[in-house]
Length: 192
Image (cartoon, rainbow, N blue to C red; front, top):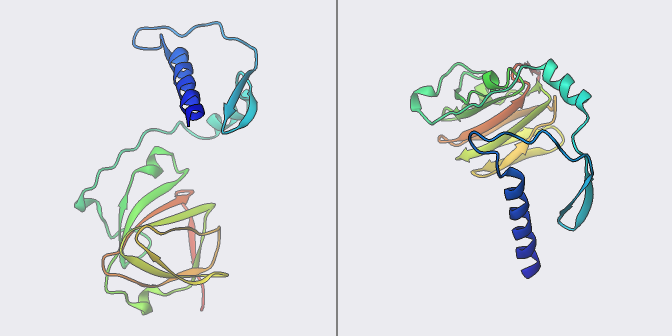
């Protein structure tokens, strides 16, 4: 335990030294050491370079506009029935606009009671990434290769690109947080 405390103390000291003098009105030092520094983290030793290769970072910044901060506070009036599904209300979290379409995130309230004739349709999304987290209630899903799964408050799952899936049932109070890349994507409904 003493070893952890000592290393945390050393880390705090290093951070203070690095950032001292960078407060309001202070200028960054124009001379930087080109020597490699050794970083110790959880028992592993790696060499940190002065900076990452600039070609990759420059290409990435040119490909996409600079992202901005998005802040979204809960307001009941922000839940709209203007999303992908007629039986759901969506609260956009502002991620699509802030990331210039890189990703989207929203809170989804599925409107109860569940009507399987409307809800349980096999489909897939043409996305790069999709993650869902159950904020409240429960939802029962079917995913190809996984079968039926009951997701409860606190459960999270990812859906690989183009995985065939459907919602089977849900509680009247269910709320989901969904994060998808990219913000704009195609959904394809399939014949069961």
